[in-house]
Length: 161
Length: 248
Image (tube, rainbow over all chains, first blue to last red; front, top):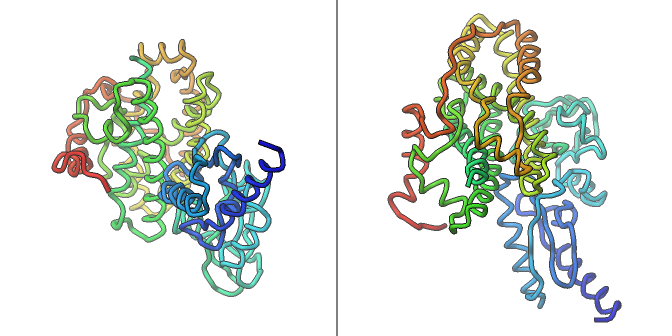
């Protein structure tokens, strides 16, 4: 296979994956979330966000269906645990999509300290940083529940992970 | 053989605690607490599926994580006794989580550095989740211990109930020794001083003291369980017992 063909096929796979939304947060694609770790003509390698994330299987099936529908049935979908997924892998574009969707994106590169979520979240609605954590766990394992003290709206915050 | 048991023990700890926590779903004192406990349960069951899947793969007899979770009887479970203890009230549940999550953080930190990449990969993944559980439980120990007279009394009673099962977490046996030789083991006994330190620091913050030392209750690792586990399994395994092989 020539280099050009290989490039073309992985670019095409990338486009297909960009059209597969996360089942829990449809505003972002599986590419935006950084769960696609490798794309080659032979396989798409993905990693789960959380070990118990119920969306893991749905994501794998959605990717499989999208590949099949776009004539990429020979491309395998495989999963890996290592290295563990990090919210640092969410793309800048993905962060903006999250914010527009009403979810405060996680700060980048704050992995270590952020397990305690000590950094403040910016309200995705009014932009104020006068916010507080209500609950360490929100509607899904990857989100915490926050409240904006400026506009009084509750919001989800993507946890640093 | 013993590496199979080793992986199975790790899976059983997470599975049984996850199942216990899921009993709170829809019953917790507040929606935030309900979400927290359900999410911790989800993390633990996710970890269990990986460790049990690995146990089945090492065993090589075609059993997957579901087969190990749903088609073993109570004496074949190898979880520690702490995780099968009943939820009691919210403080008792938090006491169990507090003692276990701090142990799990220390354990997984070591396992993530193991030579055996299969174990190390699951450990590194789970560690991020479990660190969150330890923080959550510690925060609640402080909030309840340093709260009202009622919450403090309940936190003390919860710790008192769970304390006798803590020693078992650090007991080493032949399975652990063989796992160390195989490059997948952790010297659990060596984790005790760091665990003591963490527990004591949080208790001090909460204005609490350690429960009085007592004779340890052991047996979970070799299948000698309290009566509580059978009841838990009867609910967890109902579907596969009544409809063998049923799938979604």
